Amino acid sequence: MSAGTSCARESSPACLRSRLQRGANAALSSTKEQSDDAPDLVDRLDARDRVERLLGFLDERDRGMLVLKEVEGFAIEEIAEIFDLNTNTVKVRLFRARQRILSQLKKAKE
Image 1 (cartoon, rainbow, N blue to C red):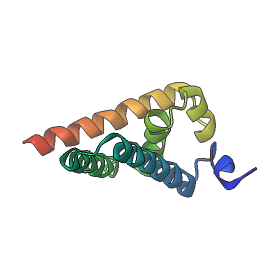
Image 2 (cartoon, rainbow, N blue to C red):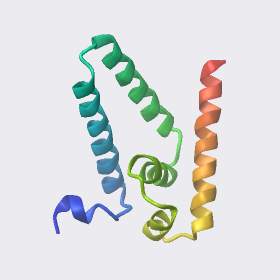
Image 3 (tube, rainbow, N blue to C red):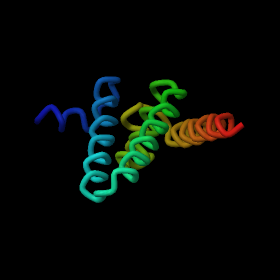
């Protein structure tokens, strides 16, 4: 099993950071391939930086769950297994994490 494969289901901080970075790099590569327009690329990079800052408002566990769900596309059941939690607990934590991000967005607009 390769290092990338062994991290696929681990919830350690190093693995979660690695998956987040791979997702960000993939999005950046996709952006570079899709856009020859420099202002569009700058806008996308600015958006990525804002997302990373917003994720910084979450604790490590909630951030990891949100990245697994929204970036990696894991199912609730898979996330529950990784974190050894009940599926309802995962749903609630994801909901609250999204609420915290929305709250920060609202504060930024004020």
